[in-house]
Length: 173
Image (cartoon, rainbow, N blue to C red):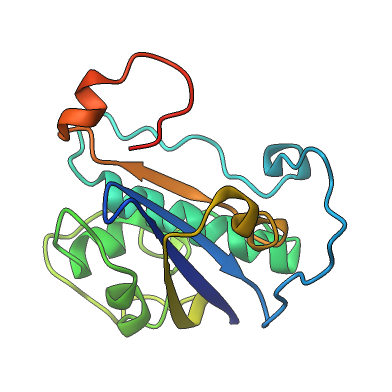
């Protein structure tokens, strides 16, 4: 099992929540970064998960983020079990601490469907993270080194007045 380190970055109080990761303590302190970095072209993003009418968007995105971080670290793209996270982290807003308490994520093939009850030992996790680091108020330039070794998940509070009034361009909250 590979251990990953997550860095959570909060923008604009809690309007944006960006989640990235640093793998194996590598903080990418080099000042030379590519002009363009698209993880999709590097084979570390799983195919789109068809959520249908599922209210468990947070569970899906958390698992997909961990899948990608695992693939960046190991070169092995593995589909994780969203069903286990749904069963064992029942909140609609899944926190990463719940996934840590579970010992990480299991393979989808080992826990393919939600059972309606948490069975934490029904599978063996293949990827987890060992620590959570929280930053607040980072700007784009401060994010660049972080995302050289990680994916970035962005969540928008679509219920905020500012977002409802947004029309085009870069949303600044």
